Every structure is written in structure tokens, then in C-alpha cells.
Length: 437
Image (cartoon, rainbow, N blue to C red):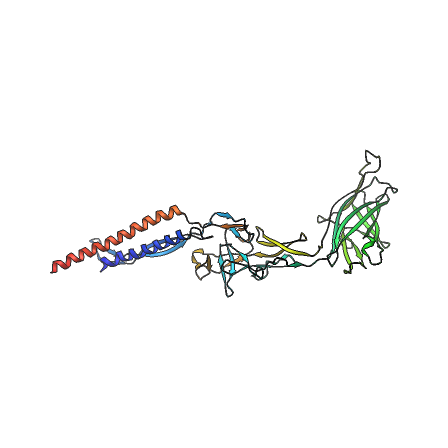
């Protein structure tokens, strides 16, 4: 009888709504949980006649669950202060994780390292991202599991291949003035540290000689053979040319110019490979890093003021052991070593879909793509409309307890009303049966 079936559809739909509310409340403290709302729609209608004007007289068959809609609005953030592997997404997107057979998507950034250094979820899925080779992330490469060094893992030494210094030589100096020296620390292939000393001596107007050397004690022969030459400056104080081995070459970036001086040292007493370095003379802005200006005299001594130097840098480093890692706002995972080096080991990838409501809920905070959601679009954080990464924070559930209790009361009253309809129709049916008897 329709009198019973109609309220039964209401009871079934209300039961689903109550289950949804209960699930929301039970997941109030679940990291990155997204609340759901049960939506109803009416069922089909039966036409039982028409009015005098021809309008159809229709009787409904009840209600049904039209959808369980997920609220994907962002939750608040909780600072964890426990591990740098806890991360949250500030904005759109999902972390990409793999169960070994397929990729899943989640907003839950409760990650840890397994015994092999792989970054994994609480349920053991691999966190996927872009690989890094020698500290350079390749966002054009296929996604791979993020692997981070484990405690005590060694970073091999890297020999210095390039050094730079910024120096301003005093054009007021005389040829009898003592030379000006600057030092730069460098490393050999075994991680041993050496000090390159560059000495500048004025030899004439706008002309200085240079000598770059290592300490004699660094060589098995006990003798240091310096790299020497001459620097010439133009009327504006910019380094114009260098002369080495009797050959003069313009300094610059144009064809035929040189932008560096080769520094080669062999026979190191440490047994390391020969040091072969380039002394960069041109900065990133294309101007010379060695300049000449009239700096006047020292007011106290009356002697020519000392030349100045700064920003003496060189690549290369000593051997180090892994200490910690951090995840930047762009998703880059950076490892820190005991030698002070920081090296990118990967980058978290984020994904999004065209239809969020089409995602299939898999539990554990995971979602899977479907035909309805569309294929996931993967990119680096902060690109293609995706959010950025917040390190040492986790996204909280977006369940609104006040709204859920209000919905709970409404769903309860609706369930009671449909229950009352069933009991009322039962009474009517009983009365009908009594009339027959």
C-alpha cells in the first residue's frame, strides 16, 4: 500500500541523513576530514486523473537520497611542532599518494619516514612527487616516491670548481704600496679545506698584478706555484682585460671575451685529485666583480686607504652526514647535512580534478578519481591554481558541530514524523479490518 511505502521511503532517507551526521560528528578530530550533507529529492509521480481544466492530478511516491555532497572547503590549521614531515595544503589540491598499484589523493599530510627513508602516509602509502638529481628538481619528470636520507647517511665531498670575490682596489695606491690580499676557502675531492690567497699589487696607472696561491704546506713538494697575471682597468674603474702568459684578453661576456681565470693546482699532499677551478670575474649582472676606485688616504696614517673585498664565495664542500629535512612552501623537500649544506631531494606534487563531487571516498582520508570526477591534473605546488605547502602544520576537519547538531534535530524530527505516519496508517488499516468483521 502506498500509505505505508511513502513514509518508509522517508524513514530510509532520514536514516541515511542520520548516518551521515553521525559520521561527520565521529570524524570531528580526523585530520583534513571533509563534512558531508545528505540531500533529498522526490520520487516519481502517479497521475490518478485530471481536473476540469485538464490539469493532471498527481500523487507522489515519496522521497529518496539524491546525493551525499562533500564540503571541500578548507579546514583550519593546527601547528604540530613535532615533526617537519607534517604538512598541510593552503589552497586547492590534494597530495598524491600511491598504494603500489594506483595513485590516490588526500588532504591528510600526516607523513612519516619509513626505515628506507621513503616519505609515507599513516597507512603506509608512498608520498609521490618530482625527483631531484644533484639537488635540482625536475618537474617535467614522472612522479616518483619521495625518498629522504636517513640519519647518519653520508653526503660525499664535492671539490670546488668555481670561486668568486668582489674587490674594490684603491686607485690612489702607489706602486710602492704593499700588496692587498684576500682569501677564499675551497675544498678538494676528499673534502679537505684549503685557502686560496689572492694578492693584488699595483704596477702602474689602472694596472695591477695578481697572484693566486695555496699554502706551501698543502703540497707534497712543500712548494706552492702561484697563478699570476695582470689586470687592466678602464677609465671608469671596470676590469677591462687580463694578461696571462703574455696573452691579453678582454673581460666580458661578448664573443672572444673571457669571464674567468683558470686556477689549477696539482700535487696536493692530501692525496686528493688536482684542484681545477675557475675564478669568476663577471657577476650575474654582467659587470666585473673586480673594480678600481680612488679610495683616498687613511686619515690616521696618511697612507693610501686599504682596498676592500667582500662576498668571497666558492662552491664545493666537505663530507657531511644527514641531520634533518624541511619542506618549503613550494613543496621542495630539502635535506640538511652536518657540513652546513642543504640539498633538494625532491618536491611534493599536488593534484586536482574538474569535478570534486565525482571523487570516490576510499577511507583513510583518500580519494580516487572516477569518470565523473575526471582525470587528475598534477603539478607543482603554487602552480596551475594549486595551493602552497605549510610545513609542521596539519589541516583540521571542517565539521561544524553547531550545524551538525541542528541538522541532527531536523533529521530526528523528520524520522519521527515518518514513523508517526506509519503508525497512523497502521491504525487506519486496523480500523478498516474491524469494519469488515
